[in-house]
Image (cartoon, rainbow over all chains, first blue to last red; front, side):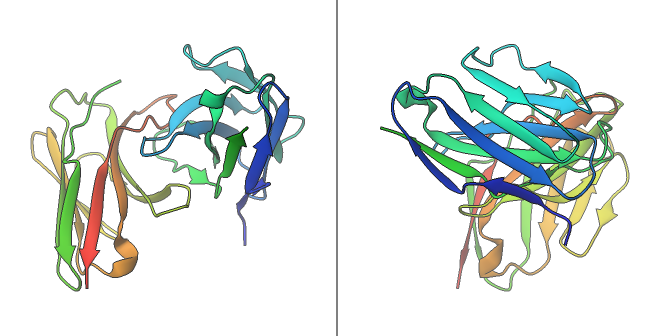
Length: 114
Length: 110
């Protein structure tokens, strides 16, 4: 089945130690998104790629970076994780950016910062 | 972004219909109304969307008010697996990712 895959499902890192979260998709979708979801809160968009074009949300901290080396893969890099960055990180894809198209979400990676 | 207002939580008995309301009084003519839900420990999943007309699919129905300032997601027979947070989201017809509000937490009682 076509899907959005996130690895690992659970990630533990130390305060200040860089960490990378991975997302891959078999849907051949043009757009990939990263959301941060803290406990009992709604998902918050960090940034998204339309093909190779990177779109950063205005309030996304510089500590968060992303890479999309090809259509299938997208990475979220947290350069110096703080305790406040502990959250579920959700990757999503869509065929295009039009409102008609739905977004397909992966299961998320839960990040713990010690 | 146009705003939506949903009740924080709702409760339903199993096997009964559920009507989840959403107010969006500042909706623009090009905004689509999307509904997603998030089951515990999972990513959000698409439920249904519409523009002006009522919509039905295998998961739910979407009833849109004539003035489009409100809409209702209808689950025809709630099951325990429908317990989730339901998000009502407005998306402009152009280039806009999903922006989530607080949603409604639906509890289903056996």
